[in-house]
Amino acid sequence: MASARILAVDDSPTILAMLEEILVSAGYEVLTAEDGAEALESARNGKPDLILLDVMLPKLDGYRVCRLLKFDQKYKAIPIIMLTAKAEEQSMATGLRTGADQYLTKPVEPERLLEAVADELARAEG
Figure 1 (cartoon, rainbow, N blue to C red):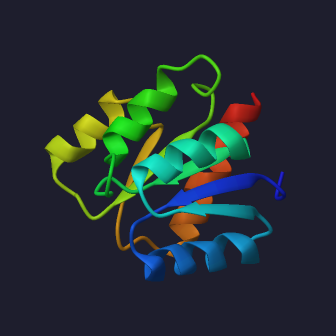
Figure 2 (tube, helix red, strand yellow; figure 1 turned 90 degrees about the horizontal axis):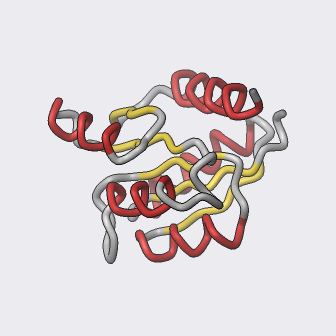
């Protein structure tokens, strides 16, 4: 399922470009968003197969975006991988509690990122 559509959300254009490059080179279609409000809109309109979500975002933080999507019947099946610089146990626990399927910390190796993406896409397919 290499043609899956992935929504990458980060407020850093540099990180977004890097994520896009890694994902596109692996054969994925990539949508991007730079803040929480844009992320919600893209998730609802773009029908992504998976979301890579930063925690520290303008407008709505990643925890809130995750919670809003996971508690909505139409979007709760979309796997969400939190990708953030917040490496503390408390942050990770909060991320998982809000519904994130995985929690990765930056910087992340491209191989590790692609492995997590492939795992979640496979799990979502059943």
